[in-house]
Amino acid sequence: METRTCACRKWELTGIPCKHAVAVNWNIVENGFEVGDPETWVHSVYQLTTWNNTDQFTIEPLNGRHLWPKAGDLYTLVAPKKISTPGRPKKKRRMSANELDEIGEGGKLSTHGKLKKCGSCGEYGHNKRGCPKGKGEASTSGGGSVKKGKVAAVGKKKK
Image 1 (cartoon, rainbow, N blue to C red):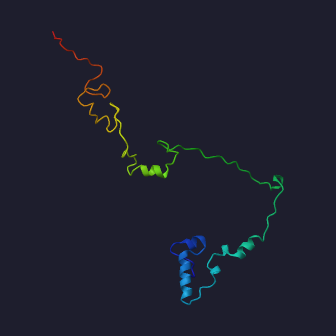
Image 2 (spheres, rainbow, N blue to C red):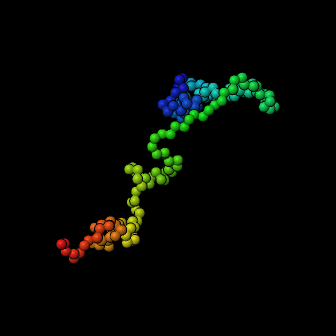
Image 3 (tube, one colour):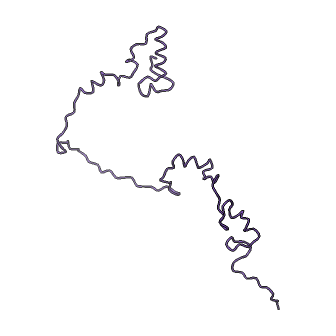
């Protein structure tokens, strides 16, 4: 208690006793020991005498820029050159918490629970690869078995 420290470090960081220190001090008082005034537990910045001493010195205001003292050496500050890093620039937009929850551990958006629409027949429930209507038929748009630019000669004999 004399060192004004606690395991949570709140007392050291703020100067105000944390709830753990207050509980320990009350326990010490209940057991009949003296802990001092509660005002001595806080840092001196928070005491009334310190606040009164801050008003001791006054700063007189100036009536305009023409009364400001002139600076001796003036330096011109130049912005540093922008060096572009290699690779694609990062996104400027940060994702919200809801978007981060939707994206799984793999970093890709999950399609779980969403309806799939087929690209060839337009029905829902399956995709183009698993289309029951597209099986067994030569698809012209899917890049199936028919090759573009070649015509098969049927019924011609070679001489």
